[in-house]
Image (cartoon, rainbow, N blue to C red; front, side):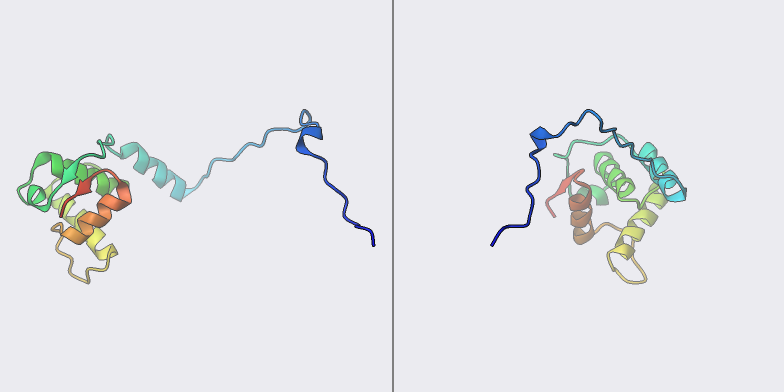
Length: 127
């Protein structure tokens, strides 16, 4: 019995000079425009060693609020620069996304804060 399969030439035997490079088209449309705008509006990425605690957020510590705001923006829950009301609404959107029911508070809790830190890798949390 003979083998009917032919062997393929080794890649070193192939002439690669006649191959043309492939150009990848950039995505177009509303979705890619929104993504590009979101990436352009994102604040500077902070060091991932930043530790955020619930107590720091409750007292309004500027560094904690800034890094969580950056994480909310990176995850797509916050557009633009936050003020107090916008931060609360963005955090409520996150909580609604995570299944906190019809009336999310917008006040950070340990579960959603942990999820946000794991998702964005912009900070860690001890809570």
